[in-house]
Amino acid sequence: MAGIFPFLSQTVFPIIIFAIMFGMGLALGADDFRAILARPRAVIVGLSAQMLLLPLIALGLAFALPIAPEVAVGLIILAASPGGVTSNAITLAARADVALAVSLTALSTLFVAFTLPLWTHFALDQFLGSTREVGMPLGQTAITLGALTILPVALGMGVRARWPEMAARGVEAARPISVLGIVFMCLSTTAFNWHHLAGWRVFGESFGICLALMLLAMMGAWLLATIARLPAIQTLTIVIEVGVHNLAIALLASVTLVEMPAIARLPLAYGLLMISVPWLYIRWERRRQARGAAAMPSPEVAA
Image (tube, rainbow, N blue to C red; front, top):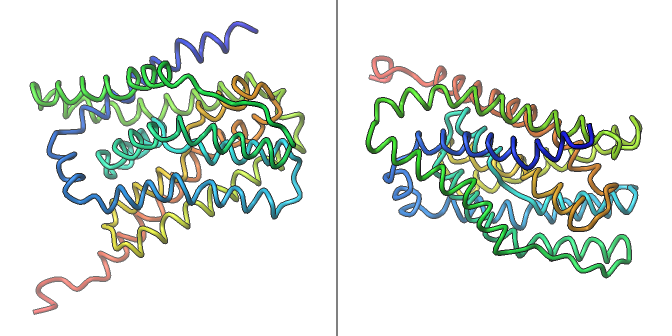
């Protein structure tokens, strides 16, 4: 059993991520990214929510709630690990703005290699009084993330440009495969690391803290997008991107870089939330839009 999770995390998970990103590429064309560059306001709002709003909300919760120091550190690390292929896959399955989602993930991935060590060092010093140096191998991280994100998306876009009909069929198959892949990654990660949660009481506390972070961050992102008067589909995409964090990077920072498994309680508990809560929001938003469309008078009535 001890060797199963390393095999999953090092071999199976990258294959799943590659397949998900390839499916996203099948849904994208060059025109999608040109449209994003022509209207950069959505990217600016999304990045502001990911890189600034999220850590600040986590910091406020860490100071406001009576939680253990290691839990506070895990909360900051989780908030400082935004985006990722999971949020992109949910955006794809929800038929939201995939080009915006991929753009936000690509940019946040570039930033997180620098911002995550800074936030982690601050959290360790603030809550544990530690000056432990935290570093991320920038070159290796960039190559790995590029191979699992940029490359498969580019391949998928190439298939769409050459065989558009086959790509359209592939996109429909990619949506359920993406959801199943994400669920498998979350459940298996939690199952093989359950001992780090240290029992049901600690798990319940971690679950509640993660839920508070997610709900506050999603509401804050929705408010920013509304103030910026973004279209509904871009607002939906930004809320998804802010609500769904990069669980793999959060676990990497907690267990591998800091070498304190107790800090991983928050990311592990969050893994059970990052599918259900965004989907509840998506269903609510779709119903709200449908009610709004039904309430609008028809052209005949308006005439």
